[in-house]
Amino acid sequence: MELIKQDINIDFLSKRKAAAYFSIFLIAVGLISLIAHGGPNFGLDFTGGTQVQLNFEKPESVGNIRDALGTINLGTSEIKTFGNANEILITTEQKEETTNFSENITTVLSQYFPDNTIIIDRIENVGARIGEELRNKAVFSIGLALLFLIIYISWRFEFKFAIGAIIALMHDVFITVGFFSIFNKEITLPIVAALLTIVGYSLNDTIVVSDRIRENLKLLRREAYHIIINRSLNQTLSRTIITSLTTLIVVIILYISGSEIIKDFAFALIIGVTIGTYSSVFVATPIVVAYNDWQERKKRKR
Image (tube, helix red, strand yellow):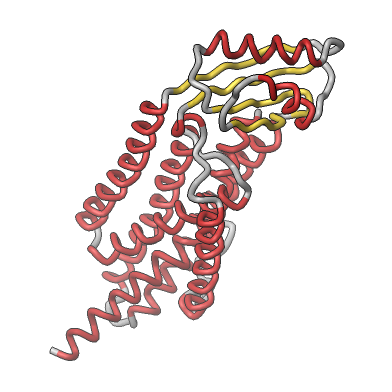
């Protein structure tokens, strides 16, 4: 299936400065949000603590629930709705035994709201030490993935393609994390999995473009480097759009119809797939061109 014919001639490289400003803007907004929030909003998986999900028969306001739980020493805690108005999620640094802690919460709330039936849907308890270890392993896994990608792309193509791909991947991950900070969403283990998925998706798109560039460099040796790059981008444009659209349709459906846990995972993929498609055209490839131009200038000076 071919959505766009390969003989179109869009000058992508002429728009690289505007794309660079757009990327800088997105990164700057994400960075400002991260600084304002004191870093990423790590979830229970990484910070440690106790999380209790309650289901009320009748909706109760978060303020009333907070007042009711004022008699219990919750420490640093967060109380918010989860899914619909009937579901409440309580996240706290409390390190008591999980069963007793949840029973204390339901006992107090039952006394405060005698006409309301309360059911415990979910209880999670993660130690601070385990949370820190999981956070370090998550960062290490993403860093290790990027390192192996540099080695692989340098071996299969050239080092300049590896530089372009890695900067594009870092660009995609950072912007996705920035969006999570802007919307005050938690970074949990499923979100780390989503970030690694985004890395794989974006890399696949970048490699397809790089492979076509390599083929055209052999076939069109007499053409200027910029012309070959533009032609390669135009030839792979149909495939890029079709792949992105089909993926986006699925993750948007997941976001609309999925549970709260799936919603955040799908949200990460929506941002990542969109930015990943953009970066393979307007970030990775322009960096390859800039690196090639720098090499050419060095040769002329010599």
